[in-house]
Length: 138
Image 1 (cartoon, rainbow, N blue to C red):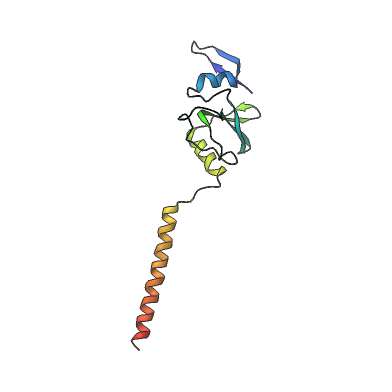
Image 2: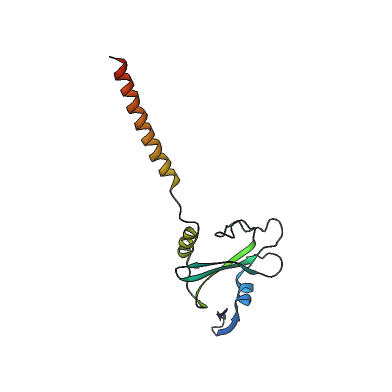
């Protein structure tokens, strides 16, 4: 895929390849050549992540990428590209967070679910205690 490259002097280079842009954007690198690490369909568009599968100890990327690529270890910075029919689409951090959540099937607020469950169990046990006290008094 070709993308537009905006040069610092203001001119636009429409012959800049994605690989060339990656060299300019990604400062923390793995070993070898960056490659496509994963591809997903999201909102009828495509999301691809590029980076390295090899690298030096201590240079591991701590961010998980969505399944089915979530069990692999990646190195250096990762580049996320959102496109439609090979045209780049703006992809903000908020967009990425929504994409990430959807690819994992959504997340529940575990803390509130546990406390609601505990409250319900607590009420049930209090009710049983008062019933057993009433039956003992007869």
